[in-house]
Image 1: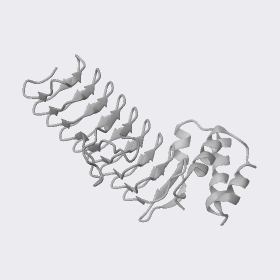
Image 2: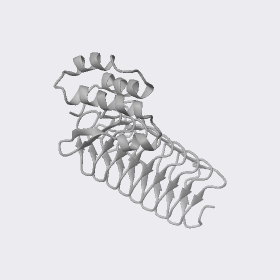
Image 3: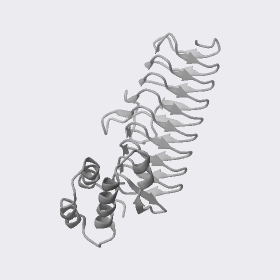
Image 4: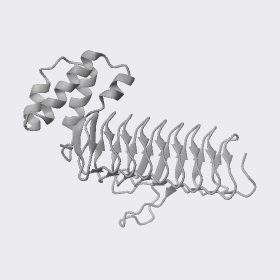
Length: 255
């Protein structure tokens, strides 16, 4: 149901069962799929595509022009998947032509109040961003990551699968899979072993990942040498995921 006091542009494509509250504005070139609920006082500008079953709370600004000073009104995009929760006062900006012209958000993410997703970010699935967490431009977040409140991620950084940043972390390098970081500037402080237990990882897998962490972070090795040592450990999909995020880092890893 679209409330009579909502403003919906005639070019917007809205599924029949979408709910839009009063005083919300849906701009041109916006597509919203079935089951999505838009609370009062939300602004959604396009080109923006929003999938199924999302919930967008009051005063969120979704699909707005980015804050990059190089942006000059080009028709860039925002793509949001399914079953995301976007809480009060979140801001999510479209991309720039300096990258791939699109900001992407996957499925099942929770963005708590005042979260900011900047231009050209790519966010995967099932991530949790606590209040005021902020992604600068071009940041990539994989899946299953947790960013504590007031965490800041520097532009072009990559946040690996199942990694975790504590409240107030200022992250200026890449976060490998499973690694927990904290501080300003953020440093590594172990792996999220409790999360591994909750996901049902075996004791053997967790023990191997403990060895992998110590190899990279506790033995004073260069990353190149540490990678050769990791190849000698008992192989597993989880260990390979950790290794892959180490190898793919372009900014260097949080140490």
